[in-house]
Length: 376
Figure 1 (tube, rainbow, N blue to C red):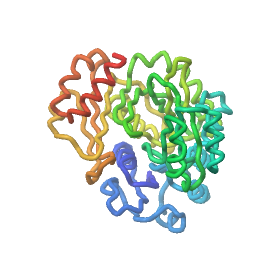
Figure 2 (cartoon, helix red, strand yellow; figure 1 turned 120 degrees about the vertical axis):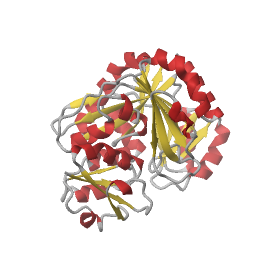
Figure 3 (cartoon, helix red, strand yellow; figure 1 turned 90 degrees about the vertical axis):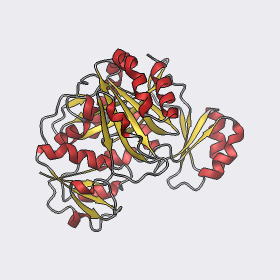
Figure 4 (spheres, rainbow, N blue to C red; figure 1 turned 180 degrees about the vertical axis):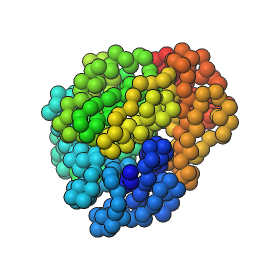
């Protein structure tokens, strides 16, 4: 089976690594000449405007994407020629934070109080209604902490407006959620409506970028049923096919949904080494109409993102550690790889945590240990 992927980044790369054992071949359409997935399939250097895509994807049995900013209208056009999943509708909703929150609210999910903002008086009115602390965000084209401005006091309103006023697609002001932890639920749905969920992933962000994730965290088991009950109706309403991750806040009153990603997601990278069947293989199984794989965790799996540059390979000396370099040039703020450390359970993780120290940057290790011990 030939799979076309709009995007050629690390997610496309990991899809191909999961798909090759299934006998799949890949075509990556990406405007970057150095797209890191290029060595694992045919690389078509092109944007996603749609003009040349049909020719670029000729012969593909399925088409999917690895990047949330692929134009949704392009997927709509491709649907006339290819079996495309996830759908243009799911992608379109995820690309507008206001539409996304409306979908969540309509299906009974708790969301942060928010208001659309189109001008300065509207921002002042929304801030007066919602109060501080709040976050002003672009409605579109924001990820990894981009397109956001924190308002801790009313005095932050003017610099926020000056910074964000020209954002295309408008703005949204969200009341900041007083959460005790962040987590994410990854689900996969087949073309026939079968749904499987991975265990909730405990996540930690720095400067809006995912830094650490822990799969198989037992303290989150009490929230698993609530999370699944909230996400399942979204999958059904969208007629969704493929993997999806929904990011959530853990609060004193329960779970509050933040946003969804209609694709494979960074927070579930731990599933490559720490689950029976990874999110990447299950995404491909779903879109290719193959039976879904088991989603159970095989232990406690700690995923560490490498941001900016790869650390010392001394980390490979740590028993149970798996190394994933993406083949990307170093750059501040760029995800260039990750490692996943798989142990039997959380007590083993706590007992062996100090062993990671010599293999990590001191600041990153301090952040990691503080995060783990906050619950452990």
